[in-house]
Structure formats: structure tokens, C-alpha cells
Length: 210
Length: 234
Image (tube, rainbow over all chains, first blue to last red):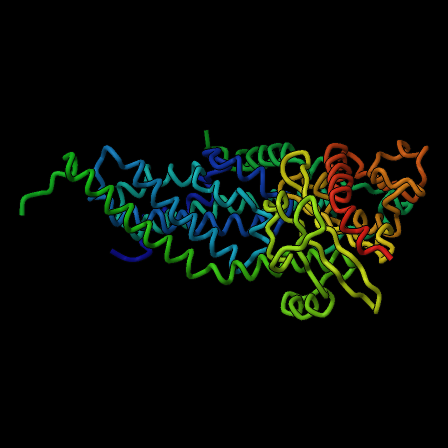
């Protein structure tokens, strides 16, 4: 079987658009709200989830035939929890400031519905390589939405992108201009509204999703 | 070979045990392999926080240790409730040990002696902490630093921003000669009109509860350190 057969390509690409975990399946919303007030933590979170979905899918798929059916959810959780702990340790060691910003949300990846959903729905039935691609696809599908929301929130809420100032100080009302940062954007509630806007645009574009 | 019955009780128990043991070893290995790097990061972060309270901000990670060693002269630990000192370096005292131990820092910036008092308290959603640097009269604020666990981004979390922290600079701890209480307060604009302006700092707009937490933390922590400050006072 070719490494990138049609089926494998679909496993990788579908979650980016037609089967997007956030926009279509509406999974993993909680962390999408919490970490998207700025772009940098959103990207680190997206990458962390991608790594964890990819490798948990791979590991579960490798051992799927040996897992006792009655404790399969527990085994899946143990694998996910181990991977999350490893990623969280690596973040603390190499990107300390971001890990402080993400705080509890890295640990909460364990409870991210995307992970358990993909393990149950895909990795338990499919071979390791397609499962790995499926994990990457779903992780990136999640990351894309986080980046979109993070971009809008950071730009409108703080006037910066990656911490670099975009909106000049002279526009601000404090300095006699006509512009005011939208403080609402820094609140999690606005992330929910932005996610809804993304879903709206996505469905308007893909009319066949019901 | 007969096909293994993966649903048997014995198999299930053995399987779960083996998986847990493998994972335990793996995690223990990763945690111990990365511990030194992580501890170094935490220590550097703490040093940067202490330097920030002396208005030395944005020190590069690699230069932090050298700068800290240059500026901080002493870090004694005082026993709570007495001015006896304990063995050890104040820097190594964790925030949760503050009940028994009171770390204190003596720094020298541009030839002038500064004293740093570490503080812990509670914000709206979680813990907050900070450092206040004082001039050698032990009552004029030289600089401050605040941080938090989980205050609201864009509101309470703004206590970590420089404009808020530097707004304490030059303020006085006490109201005139009254040393019975710490007068330095963080109050909503307008609420502190009756007090001397040198005792009042404006709260963060929209973050009243976090600002109240900062206010209480400052007043309580500095009151706790008053006896130590008095021994250093010039």
C-alpha cells in the first residue's frame, strides 16, 4: 500500500476542512476559548495537541489488537495522559514563558474530546500509519481554528500580532485618536462568538455539510 | 498458537499492570531527565522578577544570573515573629513556606542600598505574588513587581504590566509619622482623594477585585516585615 494512497490522504486532509474537529464536529471548544487571547500560546497549544493526537493515535493503533475491550478507554486515557505529561515537561524545560501562559490548559489536553474521539473512532480500527496521519490532520484542523481566533483576538483586543505592535499608539483615544482596543476580545466569551463566526463562514462556503 | 483471549480476567489485569508499569518508568525517566533544565528556568524567572522590582527589566535569560549576582548582596531568612535569622539563602524559600520563613533581600543599585520584600496574596481567581523594593529609608517605594496565577487576561492580568508596577515608584508606605499601619493603598480612581497622594496608587480599571487583592497583599506583607525593615532603617 502506498504511503500516500487516496485513503491516507483523506485521513490527513479531511479534518482540515470538511471534517474539521472544531468547525464541523464542534469538539475541543473549551481549550479553544481559553488559550486564544494571543497568537503565540494558540500556536503552541495547536502544535502540542497535534503532536499528542498523532502519537496517541499511533500508539493505540499499534496495540489495538491486544487491548482488552473492557478497559480500552482506560488504556487510551493512560496513553494520552502519559503523552500530555511528557509534552508539558518539555514545554516547561524549553519554552518556559509559554508554558506559564498556557498553565493548566496543557494538562487539560487530556480531557480534550478530539483525542478520545479520534482514538475510539479511528485508531482502534485502523492501521498505525493512517492513524498517525489522521492524528496529524485532526491536530492541525484544531490548530488552524485556534490560529484564526487567536489572530483576530490579539489584533482587536491588544492591537498586536505576536506581541508586535500593529495599531499605532497615535490612533488611541488616550492619545487623542479615534481608536479603542476592544477589551471584549480579551474575554473567553468573544472566542466563542468568533468560533461561531468561523463555523458560519465555513458552512456558508461548504453548502453540503449538514 | 491459539488465539489469545483478550477479554479474560487474568489477561485484562496483567495487561493493565504492564501498561501502567511501562508508563510509570517512562514518565519517571522524562521527569528526571528534564528536571534540571526546568529548575533552572524557574530560578531564572524568579531572578528576573526580583530584578524587575528594582526597575531592571528585560534582562536576557543568559545574562540574568550574572546581573542578579551583581545586584543582590544578601538574602537572609528571618524567622516569623522574630528578627532572628535562619540558615540558608532567602532565594531558595518557596512561596508556600512564607508562614515560617521570611526571606528578605538586600540589593545595591548604582551604589545605593535597596531592600526587597517578597509578597504573596490572593487575587480574584488564584494566587498573586510580587516584590516591593524600598529605598534605604525603608519607606519610599523604589520599584515593584507583581505576577499572578490566573487573573483575567486584559483586566486583572494587567498587574504584570510595567505601567502599573512603575506607578508605585516614589510612593510612601506610611501616612506621615503614623507607623501603626501600612497606608500605601491601591484604590479606584477618586476613592483615595482624602488620602495623601503619596500613599495612593490607582487601581487597574475593570479589575477591582484583583486590585483589592494587590492592596491587601501589600498592606499585609509589608506589615509582617515591619520589624525587619525597622532594623535596617537608616
